[in-house]
Image (cartoon, rainbow, N blue to C red):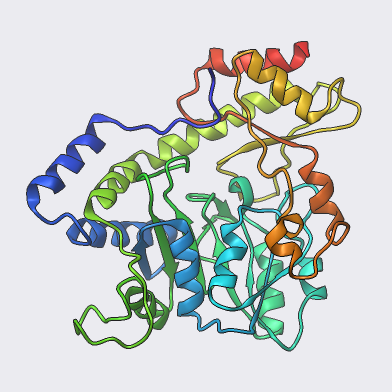
Length: 365
């Protein structure tokens, strides 16, 4: 089976874990500190704070920016649920704005329509590994005195105009979950240029206590710390990041070359001046394809190819968010896109034969 994702775990990662286990410093320690320093350097920010998941990173970033109960945060309805759940976890209100039908990212024009006196922040998601239109979003944020939290969980090493994802917002959150472009099993990282936000994040991940003053609790906090074993894996993965990224981009280019001439398949749109890192390679299966999207998915699986749908239903149409007075038809672009998208394997462990099999399978169908 050609799977949608396949984590790479080399001998270096295994040895790094064994070294940590032998050191006696297993929880947050020197490996976490080293990872934070190297990740901040990668993104071009002053600070990075490591946590135990991407969701923890999103939650912690909102806390650090002082998002409080009743505040409104504008985000996309077309994402993994953590993007909006973290807003609710802070007692704030997620306000959805529709997406661009080509990039699948939040539409800046729709953001403007959602701003109220209660709006405190914008949370754009760099979906599938393509950076949002951050120039337009920054202009909106500055005009209305709003903060920006980049959800860069799918976009490590992505760029816009030569600038890395994670360096556009007031804060940014990354995920190092097992299926991400680099991983440590479970993990997350915040990046920021704001010293205060970095300090608040460090307190929040450790039960509200400062690293300078133990057992002095300044505020509510959680156990969101990253272990040194996880950090050791992530450090080895960072060494592979450029090669992983290059391979994903090459695989995506080959897929596009083979698929773009097939009637009814719309290959990914890439914005100008963007380095798309293809966490997912997502096509749209249009009405003039010979099968429906779901039929194509089923037949590809039967042929030994395992694609996936990210995401089959926008967030506002799920039971939890329907309670917040949402209904079908509120975000028509996201709803339409969710019926068409199909993500094909693009990970760096694919062989050329694997990719040819994917393309030929679709061409035959």
